[in-house]
Length: 286
Image 1 (cartoon, rainbow, N blue to C red):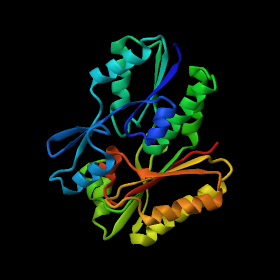
Image 2: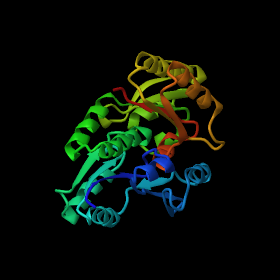
Image 3: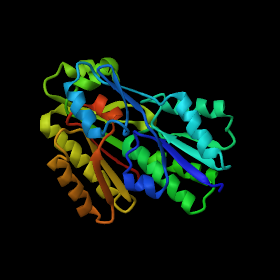
């Protein structure tokens, strides 16, 4: 039966229940740890990745899905005449979205497949995926869904706290900027991705800085409490959900009990560069 199908990559923060409910196709990224390559979410879990990351000799590497796999996925989804909307992590973080566009050309399915750069990743990307999927159930057209995604991008927030700079410096994501920051004692940084570009928004020392970060985010949520439906809290940890983030989620519910809050481990793509102890708050306003 011809319909609109939704495709994304494994860096998107989605629960198994959401993937099943909306029939979302997830194309896994690849992660390499000490010369051993794993398929994200297939033969390595997020928790297993963090455990291996902390003991690896070198910084793990993440890579986009093979072009051939993307081509095969596209061909499979469009075989019945369906249209496909593919939403992928930001180009500023990965070449996956460009690989998907190339795969569309190879498959010769430009008229059936629309590829979207989410400009973000994790739950921010996941929320775009979910809204696209919900749009299909409402009977929206491809163009209507794409227009809605562009509106979402305009108000999305990704705010991440990095408490250990080792990984992000090794990964080279922030270049000389992070190197200079790293020379200061006990420095933490707040990252944002306006327009899909990763940048250091603020920097400061220790837990006091993290508390100020939390308060800024909560103040923004308070100011927009009637315009926010969902908030994602993602983290990198060896010991499950940190109590501080459980408390943070509760504070959001106290601001507006109708806001859905999802607290989950982040993907290897983010964990690799963010390092242990990092966490992010992701949402958008309507």
